[in-house]
Amino acid sequence: MSYLKSGKAIKFGVSQLVYFEEFSYIREAIYREKCLKKWSRSCKINLIESHNPEWRDLYGILFLPLKN
Image (cartoon, rainbow, N blue to C red; front, side):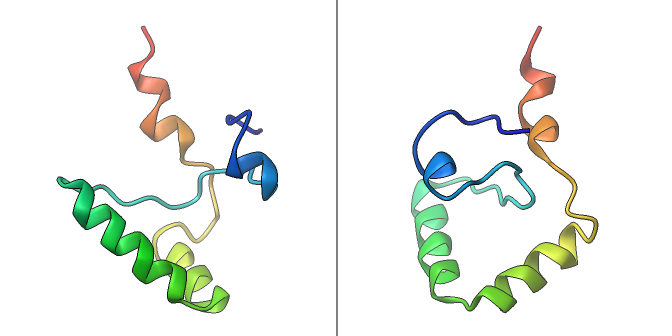
């Protein structure tokens, strides 16, 4: 199920959140994103599978508990 309605999610056909990292500072997150962009697709897949081998949708872990 797609949770995002615009932007890159639609452009690239993204329908699941299968990996995320948390950072205390935005500069750290930007640096990590730039590093990951240089990785090959197979390295990115290995990273995802090392943390989420079943490719479960993690959206609910991040956002659904915030709803009251």
